[in-house]
Image 1 (cartoon, helix red, strand yellow):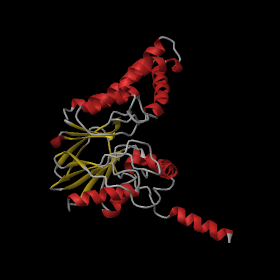
Image 2 (cartoon, rainbow, N blue to C red):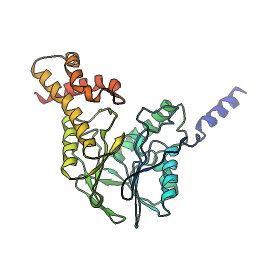
Image 3 (cartoon, rainbow, N blue to C red):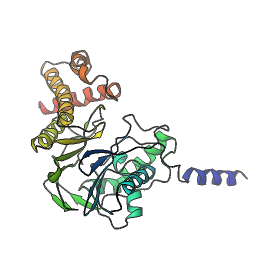
Image 4 (tube, rainbow, N blue to C red):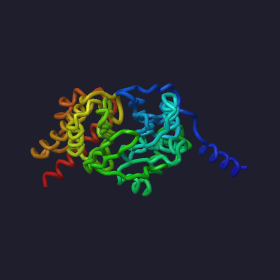
Amino acid sequence: MLLLLLAAGAAYALAKAAPLRGEWNPDEIAPGVFVIHGPTELPSPDNQGFMNNPAFIVTDGGVVVVDPGSSVQVGEMVMARIERKTGKPVVAVFNSHIHGDHWLGNQAVRARYPDVPIYGHERVGPKVIAGAGTEWVQLMLSMTENATAGTTVVKPDHPVKDGDIIEVAGLTIEVMNNDRAHTDTDIMLHVKELGVMFLGDNAGHGRILRLEGGSFPGNVAALETALETGATVFVPGHGPSGGPEVARRYRDYLDTVYKTAQAGVEQGLSDFELRPLLVPKLEPWSKWSGFDIELGRHINGAYLEAEAAAF
């Protein structure tokens, strides 16, 4: 009897979780460009793991999707919103980086369009195969108390790198990467005809993002490169879209943290001594979601990077 109960419990745990709650209407940020701005808090049972900014571009030649979300449930919501806007097929998907809150929704797109190409940085596929995909599935299950159950790994299958130009659905999409920024797998997408820049998690807007395995000066450089394109609409990985200020504000946050860390290293200070010097400088970002969670990690990470650069 006990074995039967355990088996039944395991089967229940693996059953697909309920659809995403909420209406989640897309915002048209440029002609034919829609962003579903997700919550800015961390994944939880309340938000069912939805936290990023899935986007799609509707053209005469089809639909291009960017970062379809953190689970099959989020991906299915994105597909439903696309189908409300147009009957045109999805012809391409782009994943901005390795973090699964942006790409685990691939599963829902691929279920509807089995042959759709999914583009991602050339390092993403190998990392997913090496275990990052499974780790993200398990992390989302844990943080949401199984609200993302039923999600499986569908990785990008079209590797891209800096400077690649993808012509699809009548659009010219320039892929931008500078080795290490938010991670070592980031791509930013400049849609030239529309003046739209998808930043991925190289920027949050109203949200401070973790930076593990990336680089403070590298992330600053990425955002400066994005600004140099002359794009007029910027989509962050988390938080509201807007104009160039989206990239500038996050660049300035990262730059402030790193330059303070550099000065501290030069003066022989310890990382814990930086906090009282840094907090007043960061007042403009102090109310952003994630600020209190990430600040200590950012101080430590920036200090270690500045210390390594000094030798």
